Length: 601
Ligand SMILES: Nc1ncnc2c1ncn2[C@@H]1O[C@H](COP(=O)(O)OP(=O)(O)OP(=O)(O)O)[C@@H](O)[C@H]1O
Ligand SMILES: [Mg+2]
Image (tube, rainbow, N blue to C red; front, side):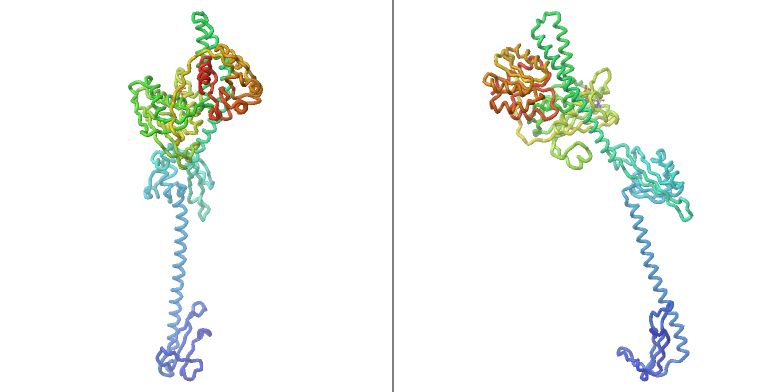
């Protein structure tokens, strides 16, 4: 019956060879089988049996045929229902999947109708408009064309273009107010928006999709990088100028002090010489600050406790701070050890204190604190230019006027100042920047108008033993030793010879390192001290020093330089040079230094 698709009637099973009894069933004598078919396919058989022979007639067959048809329909319906149910599940799953792509996207996404009213938004979008978790306030209500924060941005205009079928990309700058949570550090969010239309079956724009990518962090990082590059090029420029100025001023200052030493104080010209000297000194101070900015400094590195440097700095500024400003010191009780040029760090602190004072004309709180910190990847990522590691943090904060963004961007530029009437040169923070950078440190500034400013200085923490600091106090004495001078600049060399001569010394001079070396080779037993300029052609100071040591390991050498672009003089000091003469110097500085060196062993 299943195969033939025809009803099959057996009046007496004993006469039917195909029949076989099934043990679990009662005894069968006659049997009627009808096919169950749906759309021409047999899906089963309706089979009735009886325990008497000849028990089914034509009428039974008709009745059962009707029943078989109904069963077939019922089975088909059940199968169809299963199929529909399955595909409905599939549709639901894929709907949920696509909704998830929108809902969980980190890109703030709004889908609106053709009037700009939101019909679907995600969590990031809610964040952006400052209504966290409140879908109900947005769906069917919030309008991208007319509601803040987008109403006054180029976004509505872009939506109108999309309504005409265009795809639009644009950048939107948003002032952050309610939506501060995501960027507590920044007050402007920069968003890249992409808008595209969803066209319906009739070819009309039914919906608009608006996606926002947050570029704020990227922009902040780019700004910081640009800032670092700017400082780098200003540094190169300033360093170059300062280097030349230093040599020129060296001549002016040297000869002035030289004339002054030979002049009687009652001389009518003495007063003018004094003025020339003090003007040149002021110029030299400025040049020094520029040089510090351009990373030429760090000459006397010592292992020091930063807390002591703060105390020294405070002693220097205390008297200039009015009583309306309260000074609060919160330094760590343990020694915070750093390897620094103490003088430069003191200068840095003094500078920041003076700036803080100037920012608080009506009084306030000046807070200085120190602590130990570790900078991790997260910090260095957010602060380009900083490096991972252990640091000593020095903070100077005030409750003063604060700065505008514009000012904050420029404070480290040399000669940038907002102080009127020539009260500031604008070199203070440039110098701080250069000094800290040169110490492999990092400077950060946070400022808010009307609230105050905090400067954070990170200096690499040291594991070394603290050094005893004693300042040299040499006294002026006439000498009669022989000094070999190697200096390539004619004016400086002649000046040096005259200065030494005035101090009673015998002088031999050379125009470069090679010449000096030849002289030393022949006469080293007559030469008590060598003064070497670092930047010389032929054989520079550093190379010459090595060769001098080969001739006489006990050679006494003083190095002099204004600025060295390659290599720090500290390297040479470590190798046994006795001292360093920072150009420009006066005759007294020179003789003083020579005395100290001659008497050291
Ligand atoms: N604590 C602060 N609060 C507010 N503004 C500050 C603060 N520190 C620095 N500034 C701003 O940065 C500018 C530059 O500071 P910087 O120390 O480099 O120069 P200056 O103080 O103006 O002059 P100089 O230090 O050479 O006397 C200042 O003119 C001021 O506008
Ligand atoms: Mg200053």
